[in-house]
Length: 219
Image (cartoon, rainbow, N blue to C red; front, side, top):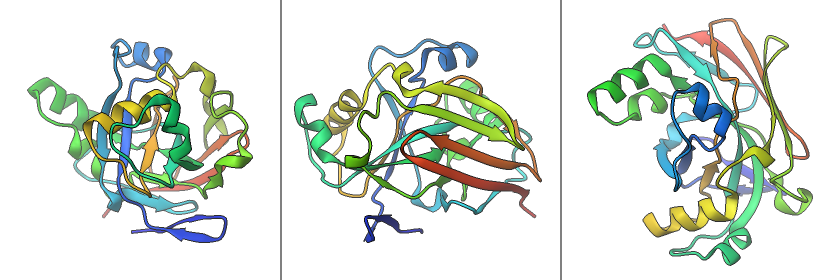
């Protein structure tokens, strides 16, 4: 497990909470609609990978894809948090990749099974350094971009997010108790692309930072 660092302090991650289909164009490219209420899924902490690390493609999958997202890092927890209080829980922001074994996810969906295998392999959640929230004026107006070998794959803005951060925090806190150190991945824009061994990945979010990773086949 990696530790998060915010303003020189170490923060132990608690859980990785992700949001499905939170950008309308990505929902279209994945063949679905944006849910009326946020839909969440979890990744294990063992999926975390520090920037500069190597994503390992599992032998079980033949198509792994890159999704670049804005991550919200909580400095406080809570249960049944109101939208008006939600942003007070936010300690900082980061760039995160939600790496997905798409063929395994598709197979699971067809069988009506959970997505855990497709989302949960070790190294499937690379994350950048944390930028304190006070340095990000408006997290809903940030350019977000993902590159594969220098070629732009995703190029959007967080203002395209359908369910915004206060809504996500409030909705999630009605399901489960949120904790200090929780990482909330807020969804990915359109342009999801396959990654292969040897690829060099870069994700950038305006005012937040940069995430770099390489890709290799697990042996």
